[in-house]
Length: 408
Ligand code: MN
Ligand code: MN
Image (cartoon, rainbow, N blue to C red; front, top):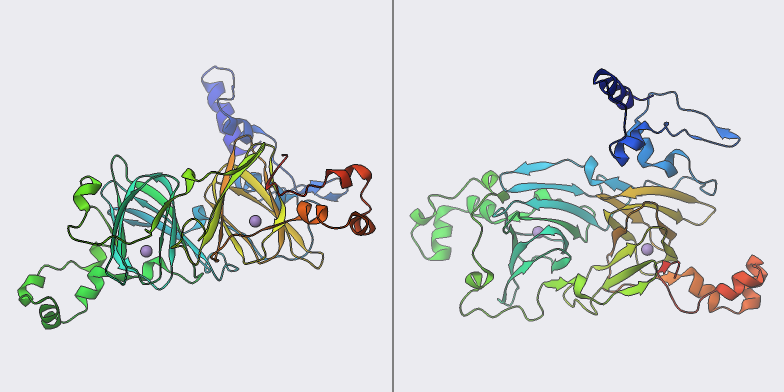
């Protein structure tokens, strides 16, 4: 019996009541501890052990017998990342320092309270974002002097090309939370070009000359440590933040991903956003995948680049095939980051009782995948049979059309 169960039973006995299971979480904590054993192999784990983590990772504790070899770690949870708390919200990041294999993409998870501002700044990497919660106002300009101000909500994207200065601010009633993905695994959100930082590190007479005003105008600059993510009043309606006489950015830096018509099957849906529908997003393409309980993101791979994933809701396991007889399986839940190295075969299975939603993100201007099923259907049957010795039923079931989520 684990400690939580023991305490629950003692409390119930002390109250003279009967032990009842109030929730699924209680039921799970009362379940016998999972053990790293399968018929003929392994043994019990007498401890010490982290039982909660073992329960979250059934495929690490008892890997499928088809797993083999020494694939590197392909998962990191934002829950294990350092949290930076500021007056306007918080931020945490999963970069190459946390997830060593991800050299080309890094992620940031940020919360801005109502009115909270991510300080005006720019950086060398491109920034792609997915809104997870609430509403935000974003601002930017491009190098041609066009401006951009927009309000975004859940499921909306933005993309700021390298060097484009921008800001983000939480709106009423409860600010926002979002995911940022940068096209550089070494990206550090704590290391961006901040507006207040530059002012603080420029001689007063140079500021005076640059802006054509007396040096006394800059007597009240804040310390840069006060900003970064700071509390501020909630701005008025979007119209009130439009700049008179400004020319807007032509194709825009935001995109409504949920408004796209998805590819739909009986078991889920996929929305794909790349430069074909969101022209400005030249270095990042993405797919928003929904898999219903019992469904599977089919066996496939990507012919263009590595895949960086963010799990939005539900539970999943992913099996990755790395060639040379190597394969490894990982479990995921909301807030986890996953990774699939370039061209490795993989599947993602919904292992929970609720819908699974996650993002596939690529450092690429276009989205592309190769379906194992479609490949075999479009190959001469004798050739396929000579390899796999499939029976008549399996050969007849191969599909020439691509269905990303199965069963169809
Ligand atoms: Mn930024
Ligand atoms: Mn994939």
